Length: 90
Image 1 (cartoon, rainbow, N blue to C red):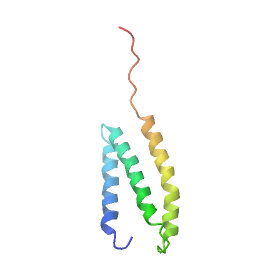
Image 2: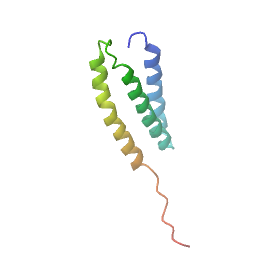
Image 3: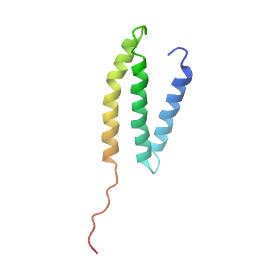
């Protein structure tokens, strides 16, 4: 992504921030941030699929991988949701 170095840096910072949040007490915020980031990745990769991009094959490969990662992030997020204790009626 020659000429887009700042975007790549911003995406890296986003990933680091999501990772830190995921390791914090409130894992859900970090995991939600990862899922939002995956959506942003998909949107960004879609712009790289233009016919004049001579590296669109790389973008196509990444575009095929990101949805799988998103599904994994969603599954992990769903598995970490804290469940409320059952109401005992007391």
